[in-house]
Length: 350
Image (cartoon, rainbow, N blue to C red; front, side, top):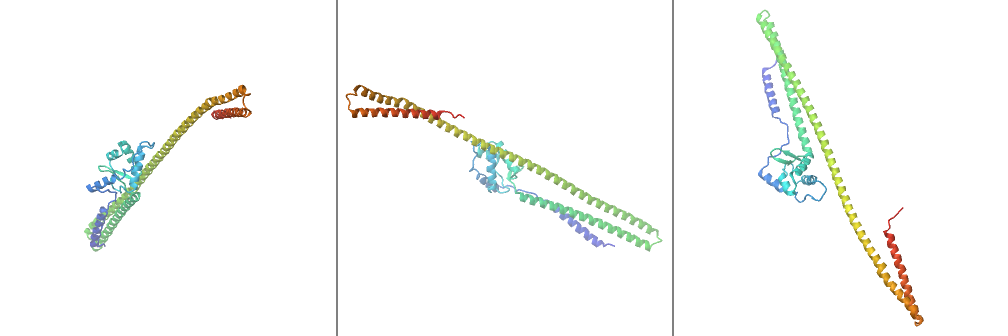
């Protein structure tokens, strides 16, 4: 037979376990309530990123430039985890861009889990992935611990009911032996049987509750797996979007480089055309101005030799002939220079 005092002690201890289990809560990520001092500190830190500006002439989209500025500020420790970043109005006033562009940049920060949006408070710097995993693991351990404690409590109740059933049968058997001829023994036996059946029913109910708890745990695990699958799919979509954005940025860089190359080529072509025009002007000057002077020198020297050759001494005649030969040689050189300039302006043919 079981001891009633021991049963009362077990009941008290079981109640204590239930109270302990009820007090266990799953840890969640909580950000501190912003005080006036915290808001002032966040405002001071919010101006530390203003050293960088939006490049208006750059082909890179404004939202991508703002994303890089805010990302570097968060990773550089300007805003610690839990601190609020400047509002859309402050960012719009600082960088002179629209709120639509700012929302696109903040949305990308949220995709990368660098910030979190809190309704009624604003956008704060998120905790790291290590902290998230630690909180999630702690919550799972607390849930498993509560389920194990509840199942153990159900098993204790079932065992206690079985002990009471055995005690009732033992009491009924003893009374029946002592009062075999008494009709009251039959009534007590019947009452004992009813109590045993009631205890068995309660034990079955406890088993059913334990099975229901197990089923709920399995359903919770299925829901957690489905949430994990949706999270993986969302991460894949975010990575694909980021890869597409990076490719677009590279393409814009290449287009800008090609535009600069075209501009430099156009400038070089303009310089080459100017040089050709100067060369043509020089060729014209050589072919007309210099040739006229040479013709005059050659012509007058020839007239002197033809008309006054008999009156001139041999030395003077020789010098005039030297002048004529030099003028003619200079004419040949001018012809060669003009030929070279014409060859340089011809197009190459296969």
